[in-house]
Length: 120
Image (tube, rainbow, N blue to C red; front, side, top):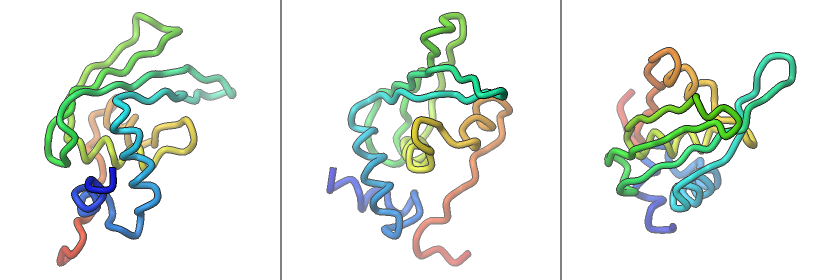
C-alpha cells in the first residue's frame, strides 16, 4: 500500500491527509466496503459497495452498489479510482459522505480536491 500513497496524494488533498488516505487505500485494495445509508427517523439500510479495475488514480473503476435487504435496488457505475478513494477518506464510520449520495442520486458533480502545488 505504501507505494500508492504518493500516487493518490495529489488527487486526495496531499500528504497532510496521509492517515485517512492510507485507510482508504487499504479498503480500496480489498475491493469492497460494507456500510450503512442512514435515513430520517433513525432508520438505516445496510449496503455493500464493490469495485473492480486498476488501482491507479486516473483509471476507471466499475462499481456496484447493492442493498442486501432491498434486492430490487442496485446501482452500477464507473468513476475514476481517485474519486472513490476520496469518498472512502471522507466517510464517517459506516456512512459514505453526502457528496457521494448527491452525485449518485442527483447527478451533482463531486467537489474537486485541489491538486497539491496548484496555483488556485
